[in-house]
Amino acid sequence: MTNFEKFPRNTNSNYSGATLSTWSRQQKIAMIAGFVLLGILIALSACSKQAPKTALVGISAPETQASSGAPSPVTPATPASSTPVAKKKVHKKRPAAIVNYSDPNTGVSFQYPRKYKLASGDTVQPEIDGIGPVPMNFVQPGGAAVAMVAVPSKTYPGTDFTTAFFNVNVNRSLSEQECSEFAVVDARNPDGEPMDAEKLRVGSAYMEKTSTFAGDALKQGEAQYYHRYENGSCYEFVLGLGTAGYGTDEEVQAVNRDEVFGKLEKILTTVKIQMVEPAHDVVAKTPVASTAEATK
Image (cartoon, rainbow, N blue to C red; front, side):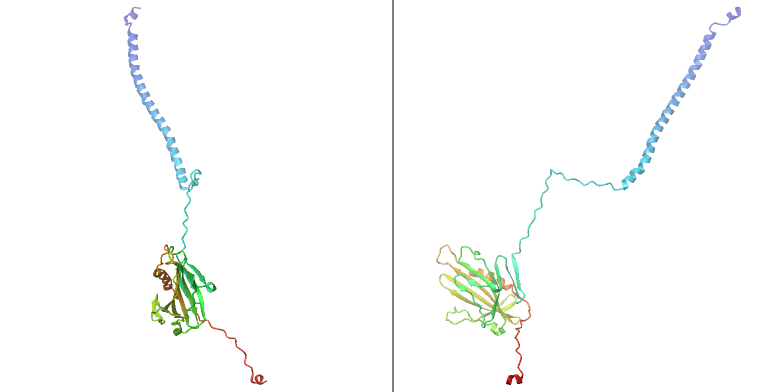
């Protein structure tokens, strides 16, 4: 027992302290290693979580490209029912102010204002109000009416204007010399002798002109005649004007005669005559009897 007592009592405590001190370092190393391992595991865990996402993106990319290549269906836009649709204004074309007239039988054509009244054929009856019909002025019979354009009676309100017209006649039986003559010429010569016809150029053609006058203090009528030879026929153009009432009513003014005839002359300047085949009269042939039959 004496030997046991020689050993110091704190031997176990020193050993245990050394052991604890040594274990404590190991624990530190283990703890550091544990932290390092924990960090590695966390990093691996984070990478493992991101890897599927990348794979999903890589897989879905071709589908996106394939879908982008195909045309997507277009859905027609439905107009809102509440929005009123503005109607387009329809602009009607106004009829031309000038009208063309042509007669294939005589080859005559001319232009006239649309507001004037046209008559042709058997309906042509040139007449001046209050005075009467205006006759043809050929030196030989055989004339025929072609067409007439009448100016509306209300064209010159407040004036003594009553009648104005442009008339076309034709005579196929006259020679060129006879066409230059007139049956009635202007007799308003102060000497009382008929005046010779005047030759003048109208448009692109030369014509012979004369005029006649009729009426009294209340009514007046004037007709201007133009003759032109073409296609083996004599063409006659008549410009007529009638007036009444001037001097009897203070509110009635005299119409400008030059202005009226000027408008009729504009129609005359548009006259054209096309070439037509001359009409041949068909004469019925009577069979000639034989000499024997004639002596019976």
